[in-house]
Length: 69
Ligand code: SF4
Image (cartoon, rainbow, N blue to C red; front, side, top):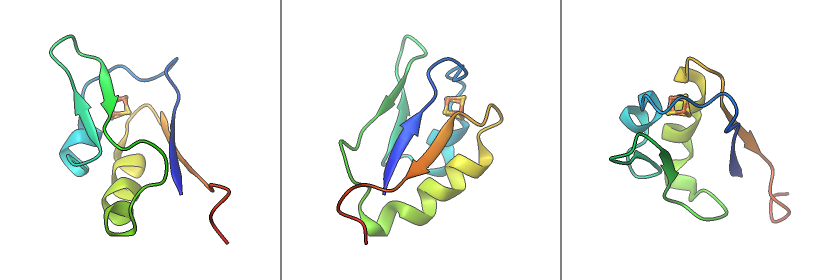
């Protein structure tokens, strides 16, 4: 699975970082940085799902990657 960010709606308040700090980080300029490039490691998926659910702007979406069955 990969994470897709809707940059139009993301406002950078970092609720996602609280749920999955290994994957999301809001930098000093208030911009969200996705720390994982490509597929989300399995062990981080639960936290990423939680982050997507918790995002007040619904800016995060988990999508299947081509490697997923
Ligand atoms: S919680 Fe949602 S809107 Fe806030 S920084 Fe994360 S992705 Fe962006």
